[in-house]
Length: 241
Image 1 (tube, rainbow, N blue to C red):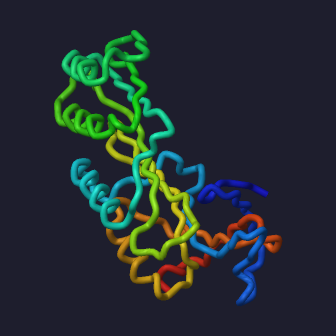
Image 2: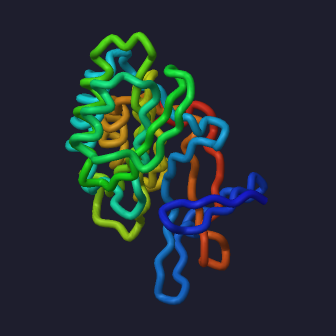
């Protein structure tokens, strides 16, 4: 039995776990209410993330900001440091980084194209990081100088009723190839909730990346009511309702 994390709760993946009968999908245990809900958890095999819908990196970032502003309420994670890596030796880029963030924490001399310097930053640097990333991206570098860093946005969904279910986050990686997304999402409603279908469809349309149906799962309370198990959904469920 494999295990993972869903919204701060332990999730045990068990394909032999049968669908619960109607009326048995809500449990109370020690004052806590566990309720069936929908999650989106890509497997570790796609840890590099989802590609953006559009190739233009600037437009992709604009779509991401609009998407989060419309559908999510939260903030960038501040409990973990951000590691900024600069590959290459373009002096103008390195000077810009040092003026903004100070001397790098580490310097790894090598051939010009492989030179690496890195900084350890916090979430207050994100706005400057993104601005510099696009400034560097827009310039031609003979030695391939580029930046690499990742940020994470923790949030709750707008348009959904208040819920004790938390844990949605969107990781975003910026590198030489563009932007990549690492979503781990919790939806406070069941997969077959017709009242929430319009909202779900709108969220999917606005997303800066394409959701994959097979990565959605049902999170179902165990019989003991202390944790959740996951259950795969049938192929085509998104288009059936």
